[in-house]
Amino acid sequence: MRAIPDSLDAVVVAEIDRRLESVATEHGVRIPWAIESGSRAWGFPSPDSDYDCRFLFVGPRERYLTLWPMRDVIETPLDEVFDVNGWDLPKALTLMARGNATPIEWLRSPIVYGGDTAFRDELLAYAAAVVERGAMARHYLHVARRQQAGAQTLKRFFYVLRPAAALRWLADHPDDALPPMDLPTLLAETTASKEIRDAAADLIALKSVTRELGSGEPPAVLRRFAARELERAEAFESAAPGKDPDEVRARADEVFRRIVG
Image (cartoon, rainbow, N blue to C red; front, side, top):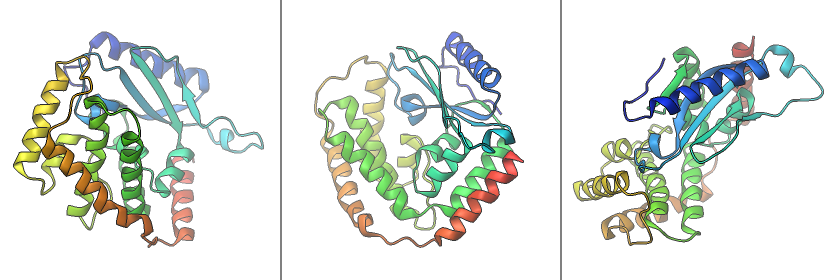
């Protein structure tokens, strides 16, 4: 599977492809899933946004049969354009079991450099089976709160707004724990008002043509929306787990062994 929009720089995409091939060769791993994360995949890029390629990798069985485990992260040189790194399969599986939304978002990215859909679907099915809604809500709540603790800019506000939209999505989909990745889809699939959706679309349009949004105030309707959703999500801080941890670990082991084997 490959899904690359025309808006991506072809030269940059070619370099990302080269880096992924180099990682697979140099580290002796396969990369069944490589996607774009960050603002481009979240639906609010700037003209100068860098490229945040993320990938999941799987090593040969021998990689996991040693007393001296290798690093579970592979990184390539970071610069102003490229941010390309990935996680080993066990890291992704254990983080999903703990309610970390990041690897789940990678599996749902709309921008795919290369991917095995069977691999993706198996991991999404695993996530749907083991993820606690309360843990996912806490993940997004904590992401937003960390962003609020820093210097407040319009650019940073997007990193509060998207988690707030994810929290609203969870509230509107009580039988699902896996929200979409990008902000426009999140809002479109919730009961957020047209005023909120239109204000978000206008702010996204502004960001798409502005290299530095500066420290201006975000629209009041979006500030109120984010504040309301974060306040409501505080209730998840005390939510008790509903999954049997032994069953979760057994499911993780089963998926891991099947993919590696």
